[in-house]
Amino acid sequence: MNPSEKTIKLYKEEYNCSQAILAAYAEELGIDEQTAIRVSSSFGGGIARTGKTCGAITGALMVLGMKEWNSEVEKEEAKQHVYELSNKLMEEFRDRNKTLYCEELLGVSVSTLEGRAVVKANNLTVKVCHRVINDATEILDKIIQKV
Image (tube, rainbow, N blue to C red):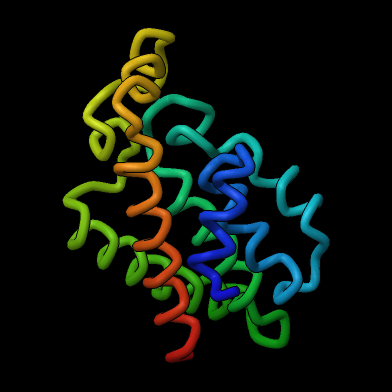
């Protein structure tokens, strides 16, 4: 199963977008899946359903940080490397989707019960979230393979 398929499988199991991405890479990162799920649990719905930065992005950024942080170099150099890769990921995601924000991607506020009802009624988790989770995973894989 490729990473995109695994992230969608986890998302369909009712994990949030951030959990799905981080958990899909857990084994590769040397952590267990349940730890990944717990660590990323607050990041769904644009960070705790605030509609801010999409959980697919925050999950992908966690993967990049865990995968690319280099403890063998000075901290400032390690941070710079991760920041550069993170900015590439966010830039390409924004180019594809016009925004990094959950609320803008969905076109509705997820911070209210009414907004979440609209998401459910219009099947936006499939129509929108599956696509952006795939985008984030595809971009993440491309960046990781180039490093």
